[in-house]
Image (cartoon, rainbow, N blue to C red):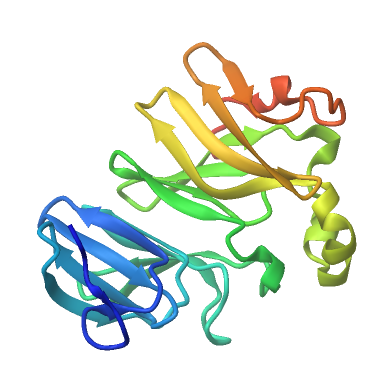
Length: 231
């Protein structure tokens, strides 16, 4: 089925950045970052409504607890958080996870959110950590990717000039994390400016990746420490 039309009017979009499914109402929520809005469609593709947002969102996820919007670039100096919990009208109910700094453009798409049952998986930009946000909006640090000596140092991460000259030689997570049937953890990571994919079998403690095994500078087979809980 076709959903919506290209354009700038109600129910129209220039570019779709992400979408999510509201199981309570059987609606699709379409995130249009360029137009700063969320468009609502039913499962037949009929336009229902649209709501304006004030954040530059990269990812959107619906849960029974609210709509989660991930933003790794501020729209103004007052927006200093990676995560926002929105109500059904896309008004901010709660701001979470403050920026460790105002991120440079190099951070765009570096982090992400995704649903895992009733929880949210969150990986901060340029990081090695996967966190879980539960139904009470408590953040739990659950997995740490063991990049060893290839982990991006904080001193480089916090230095725009240093990151541009050195950051791409290190390893960090990229984009959304997927938890498949609570047994397979799928993720992307950047190392030496190249994106690789990995799947971790949490039941049998095994990891599979398309990373070049001949590259001994990153030991993928000891990549995961599981589980790591918040203090």
